[in-house]
Image (cartoon, rainbow over all chains, first blue to last red; front, side):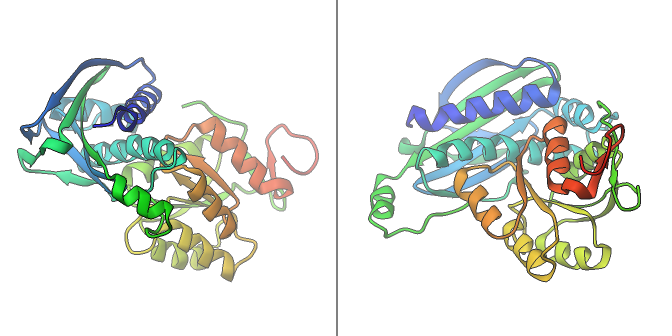
Length: 170
Length: 146
């Protein structure tokens, strides 16, 4: 996986979480994974298609999700509240939106699909050329896991530069 | 949340009326809280571009805050349709996807401004004042305009 595809996600997660929670965020752990993804709690998956293809999963333990959603909502929310799941989806949207803005301005062309709530315990297995990078961010309200499995498709990139592939918006 | 000097309509001194368009309930709630801190009023909400068009017709808000990526009809297309029907409509795009291509497309199709998520209240406040121009006045400001 190309590191220049990953850095914008790290920067965006840091910016969105530290701004929203009004406290510093640190990367607690970073590892490569080829196993099927196992959900920690409330997870949102966002798919990317185009020159960069794959998916990003934004995942929080239920109690962390409730704490973070409560912080954003300004009132205490139970773990079961629909707004907790909404918050996870919207945070994923913001982190990924900020990251793809940066990648797009670097010349990568791809489409971002709306977030989907990830409900099964197992996610799609990573393949050899799309191994997943798993990042855990330590926040004042709990740990946020970001699982990134992206593949750069140079064939599509050269077709696009030759005018063969339409530019896609996120 | 920080409170800002209330922005009112110059013509009648009433609070600015907003239509919030976003498919995320969380995002709408968050924007609603920010608008409240500006002394504004949420006239209505919509979760997609199509509903936004009908709600704009019905409510005639002073400002529309419009997300981009939404089901049924995306925000840029909805903004264009609203502005085609009412060239005076003030649509501000509010999206996490803020790359140049998208911003230019939104502005070319009638949006007045663009704010990237996560929304910083102080940034949105300045954008609202700019977009309202002389049609808005902030509490404590002298003369017309903001």
